[in-house]
Amino acid sequence: MLAGDNFSEVLLAAQRGDEQGFARLYDEFNSALVRYFAARLPQEAEDLASDTWLQLARSLGRFEGDERGFRSFLFTIAHRRLVDYWRHQRPSDPMDPADLAERGERFAPAMVEHAEPGSLVTEAISAREAVEWIGSVLNRDQADVVLLRLLAGLDVEEVAVILDKRPGTVRVLQHRALRKLARELSLEAVTR
Amino acid sequence: MSDILDSSGEMYRFLETHRSGYADEVVDRLLSGRLDPDDAPVELRAVAALFATATAAGSAVEAERRAEVVSAAALAVRSSLEAAPVLTQRRHSMLSKLFTAKAALGATAAVLGIGTAAAAATGSLPGQTSHASAHATAGLDTAAAHVGQHSSDSPGSQAGRQSNQNTSTSSIPATGPANANAQFGLCRAFLAGNTDSSVSSMSPPQDGSTAFKALIAENGGSIAATITYCQGVVTAPPSHSGSGHGGGNGKSNRPSDAGKPSSAGRSGSHAKVTTPNSGGTSTADQASDGHSSKGTSHADSKSHGHSSAGSGNSSGHGHS
Image 1 (cartoon, each protein chain N blue to C red):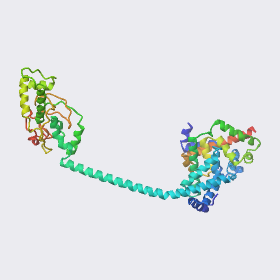
Image 2: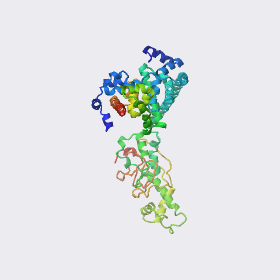
Image 3: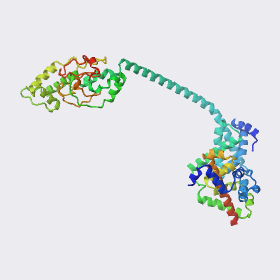
Image 4: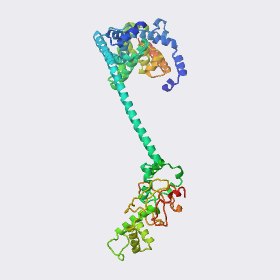
């Protein structure tokens, strides 16, 4: 994570069109951005992330704020890009049951090998696979909340703004998401 | 149902939280990556581990893609910076044009408004000047129609009201000097249908219209007498018809519109003709002897339409 003092300098450089400045921002946030997309559209994640950066570049000159604000700014664009993608293309809806079953089966063997739920994930799957599994288990709203909180580091109020929901609704969604994830993980452990 | 519960606020959140058994603090720490799996509640340890994996240090970024994106993004930033002044300048230009156009429109509207007000004040609006003449031309009397309106009438409102009455029609007992014009026209029409024959061979008018019948009846039921009467009317057309209003609403000494009968018979005949008109129509008030409250052309039922229309109309204001 960029240090607070550094961030304003990096941002200023990026806003002037300096490649080095923009590269710093990219290195800092692209990984979370790609994972955010990968949880929903694994095949399109990199392309959608690149689109998001280019879209951000066009409006970066108008941005004012700190690093936290920048995160919110970036993931707001990302979320809208995702919604826009779903609205216009939907080549393979991530909520498609067949697709979800396939993705669930893809991760299931890795989990079967480990009896201890706490260790199975960290040892068996990569970060990208972890977010893809989260995206396959949760419904769209729940995944939105969990991924924006987890990957973008946003709080409830910030997520509520991005999703155009009330903070109370976001809290309910995250509770349900955690229950569902816990239940799925325990079921996986029991079946093993 | 769940949507309703979702929107019901804090109470439901409280219930949901207690049902899940996870405190908000734990959830917040978990979702912000600040909860170590070992410190997490037992049922959430796997979730905490999953989240830790999901937020682990990033994998190697494709160098080629990184270079492409960074270069393109930096170029986009520079392009937007270069475009911004142009856009601002263009916006200013558009704004100035817009303001110029608005100012021109405002000035035009002001001039028109002032001109209209001035015209209304001086009684020069078309509706005002034509008030009497329009009725006279149509051979109509407006006396009764304006009774009760007079006190509140202003030149401007009068013109507007007249225009609103354009589509109306009415049955009009023929009275007044305007009716003299009608008589003139009626007689010409009557004679036109009987010009080539002698009096003795005349048959009743060709269409047997109510107007002609009334005209004949007023002349003792004799066609010959009617022709004689009409010849007198045609050879000596009314010369004072159409003069106007008390209050100076305009005078008209134009010849009447011959050949356009708009009402039947002479004044007092009560012959009724539905007549389209250009200035609004109304029913003459016989009881007022045509003393128009507006001072518009008035009827003199005893003059057979040969009165000097408009004379003394000013004294008729408000009479009913």
